[in-house]
Every structure is written in structure tokens, then in C-alpha cells.
Image (cartoon, rainbow, N blue to C red; front, top):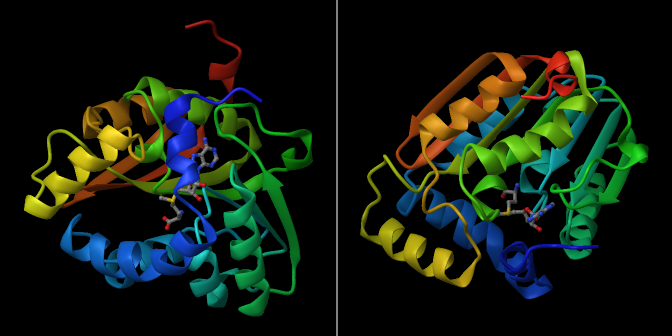
Length: 237
Ligand SMILES: C[S@@+](CC[C@H](N)C(=O)[O-])C[C@H]1O[C@@H](n2cnc3c(N)ncnc32)[C@H](O)[C@@H]1O
């Protein structure tokens, strides 16, 4: 399978050791002190708010923190599908969800978001979450987000919701720690968001949805998109 060099760098970092540190360093410290968007107060409540009761797809699972901590909302969701390019993250996230008490159907799929979804994901998901994945991908908004959305939207139910969060590179004020990490991570290809703007994200979401909301908290854009425009897949533009 072809993957861009920088895409691979943004997945190579998720080794078993890095994943053991991820929740503390990224979710507890960096989200609050570098990106200004608290996991406990903003991102986790946001994740919980839009999970559907039939089928949920989480794309770019990391350690599986969000689904496991949203178990009170996800417990009744009949199907949860975890998709990620990295088998190590999938293993950890899947195990964590089951240990949190999930009893429904769990599907775990190794998948690169730059490719069309595998047929095993050909289900109508009533919610798809995309947390902290877009800023890892190479390229710029709106094109890179359009590319990902074009692969995910067909899996959404007509009344489904796609939502997520991404760290922006431009048009937001990063503090000194954020600026330092932006530079380092973009140089190493862990992030690919130096040119990502809120306007570019909105443009990409508008291409595929009739109902789009984007709110920026410090340097993080939170987005909710509803009313997928399935007809856009049959148009050439
Ligand atoms: C920064 S982590 C985010 C984890 C989690 N969603 C969170 O917010 O804590 C990015 C995740 O996206 C995955 N990922 C990166 N590039 C990907 C790609 N091209 N296709 C699928 N997953 C990818 C990584 O393996 C990793 O699990």
C-alpha cells in the first residue's frame, strides 16, 4: 500500500512506549498547556456529545482514550468500529474499549484514510469521529480535508454526524510551547498542519455537508458536520 513519507512519520511515532505516555503527555499536558483545549473539559465532552446509538466509527484511534472514557454514552451503541493505519494503536484502543465494559459488536480495521474505506466498513454509521488526525496528515486545507472526507462521507447515514478536532497552524495564536512544538513536529513530519486554517477546514466541510459548525478553542478547531451531500460524489467539480 502506498503511503506518503510524511504520513508514515505521523504514524511511526505511535510505538507501544509512546502510547503508554500519550495520555499523560498529549491528552493531559499538551492539550491544556500547548494547544489551550482541555481534554477533560472540552474534548471529551465534545466526543461524548455526538456519538450515535446505532453505529459509531472512530478514525485515528490513538490510545482509545475517547471511546473508553465515553463508555457511558457508547455502551448502548450497537456497533463500534475503530479504524487506524497503525495496528499497535488499534490493539490498544480495542482492548481498552472492551476493558471499559463495551459489550456490543466491535470491529477493528487497519486502514489508511487516504484510501477508500474497505467494504467491511460499508455500513451506515450514524456518527464518525475524527479527533486529531487531520493535523497529522501532509498537505493543506481544504484539499487534504476534502480528500479524507470524500472517503468517509459515503459511510455516513443520511442523518449521521461527522465530527472531530484538529490543531490549526495559521490564523490562531500559539503560545511559546505551541509554537515550539508546531515547528518541531512539522519539521519531523509528525504534524502537517503549518498552513491549516479555519477557513480551509470550513471550505472542505462545506463541500460535503449542508450543515457545518466550526468553533475554535485557542489553537484547536472543533467541527460538527451534518446533512451529508451525497450528490457531491456524482458531480465532477
Ligand atoms: C494524534 S493521534 C490521535 C489519537 C486520538 N484520536 C486522540 O485524539 O487522542 C493520530 C492517530 O491517527 C492515526 N493515523 C495517522 N495517519 C493516519 C492515516 N493516514 N490513516 C489512518 N490513521 C492514521 C495514528 O496512527 C494515530 O492513532
